Length: 390
Picture (cartoon, one colour):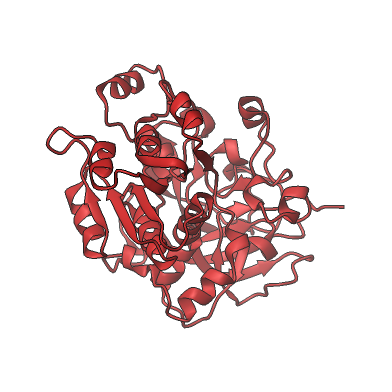
C-alpha cells in the first residue's frame, strides 16, 4: 500500500517541544512576513526534515504575492519551493537519503507508485494532492508542490529554517558537499523547469527557437536551446536590461512593439518561414495589448494569451509551442483557429524534475552547463537579515 504524505498546514505542524524556527509566511496580498513558527517534524514514514542552508524566490511566488491566488491561500502559509540544505531527520521508510546528507529539495512531490509516477510524469501524480478545488476546476489534480498554495496540497514551503519534505527519497536529491550553493539553488527548480520547456517544445539541433521571457527561466531556456544545437534563438522581452543579458549570451533580442511592430512581426520579418519551436516563459501576468490589459484589470480573465498568441503566429506550420510560464486559470481571444489550421503542437505543464536527474546534475558536475549565472549578487544568509517584512 502506498504511504500517502499528509499535506499538513502551517498551524498543524507537530513541533519538537519548545523548538521554534523562522519562516517566510504569507499574510495577504503583497505581504510576506518573517516570523517564528514551530519547527516541523516527521508526520509520515517517508518524510524527512531538512535544515535549510540556502533558499531563493521563484517567479511563480509572485502569483501568490500579488494576490492573484488569494482564494487558494491561508494566512500564515509558509512560502517557497527552491531550497537546499542538510537532512536533519528521516522517517522509518526513507531509504535513499540519510541524516547529514546535503540535498537539493525539488518542488514537485510524487508518490512514486501511481501510473503517472511510473511513467516518470511526476508533476501529474494522482496521490499527493488532496485539493478538491483543483479537481473541480480542471477535472483532475496535479501533484502536490511545496509552498505553492492549497490548490497544490497546502504543503508548507522551504523559505524557512527547516522544512518537512514528503516522499523524501524522490523529493530530495543528494548532492556533493563541496558543490557551489548558487549552482545547486538553480537546480532546485529553474534548471529542470527550463529543460522541461525544451523537452515540451522538442528543441533539436538546427532549430530556430523563440523564447518569450528573459527572466531566470527564460534565459536558461535560451542557453539550453543553444546547448541542444539550436541554430538561432530569439529572446523576447519588454525589459531592455534583460534583453541585453540575453544578447550577451548570443541571443537575438526582440523588444515587443518596437517601432510599432509586434514581436511576431519582427520575428517573421527576420524568419519568414517562422520559428521551429516557440516557448512561452513569461507567465500569466504578461500583457502586450490594451484589450488584455483591460480584461485583466476588470476581472474578465485571470490569464492573458497575448504572448501565447504571438508565439503561435511566429511559429511555422507544423511547429511546436510550449507553455512553461505557469498559466493557471482562463483567458479570452485565444487563437484556436490559427493553432489548428497551422497544425501546431501546443504543450505545457509543470516540471517533471525527478525525470531529468541525474542527467542535469551530471551536466553541471562535468561543467558542461553552469546555471548559476542567474544569481548576480552574493547575498547574506536569509535568516541573518534583520527585517520583519520582505
